[in-house]
Length: 72
Image 1 (cartoon, one colour):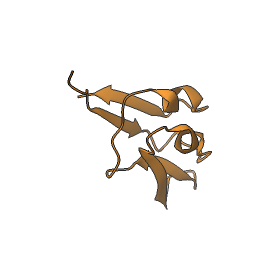
Image 2: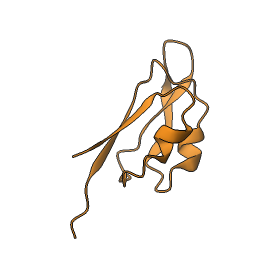
Image 3: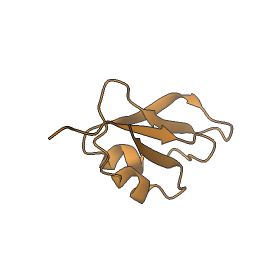
């Protein structure tokens, strides 16, 4: 059974840096960005070194609906 690769996209302009997505990610596929978004928050970003499994937990816990997960 082949694994489906997934890609996490964080819309940084909506992210308020609460880090709930980072805390709840089972595989650690998200991290805090070192840069500030337009509102002055350190938004979440995909960690290129970790693989997203597409569980979609990050999209469920994000209060700002700033995260999208796509299968590739």
